[in-house]
Length: 310
Image (cartoon, rainbow, N blue to C red; front, side):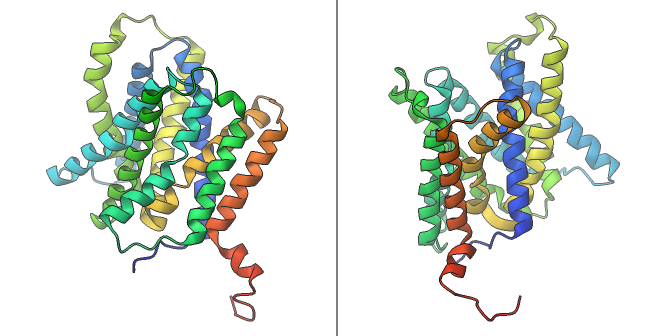
């Protein structure tokens, strides 16, 4: 029976860094959306990130893939990892509270397990992983608080849209693991996916937003877009594909449990926002969930591994 790779301390460090980069994207997106429509923000974000990664690949002497089979994989990943989930989440967040949307997005590890069990039934899913995911989702719900359950928080279609985004991420993680087997390095995979996403977003933004008719954005918006492109997208997706290649889809999907916590902690540290009791309780639950998934603390409590040499 196939097992998921163990998460080593360095892997946890990359997951935490990724959650910080993607958690910070909420703040940066909010700044950019003050002057620009959403699809235009997405287009600029993925396009700038693709250009940055292209420059990095060329500067480091790496070749840009030219095989159609490779680019077909890039367009597939761009569709199910960017275009579809971004569009569904954005529309969902216009109809329901953003807190509820974040809770629904945190179900990504559940969908990752379902997709894996259907497409690769030999993969083992342990009880501590399932328990940890449940703790994590509960922690996200407590972290976000009752404000997520607003008067408009139970619209069925927007909720299904957010769940559809989580399902799309589950498929993306499963298929993204193939990049390592195809010999595609993480930075190259990130570049290809973002380039394909930009190509697909151009007609959508052109038809819906008509960005050439918009006023020029101010310096704060420009800075937010650059931050989104450089850190949350270019660097973020390079780390994402690195995690997929080393710890697999199920482990990488755990980052969605950590993103709300990272966003709130960044708000506290950078913006001086005060943490309330539900924030602390949610962080504890998420931490317990991640400890359960990691498994080492549980094995230590049971006395396993005593007397073994490191």
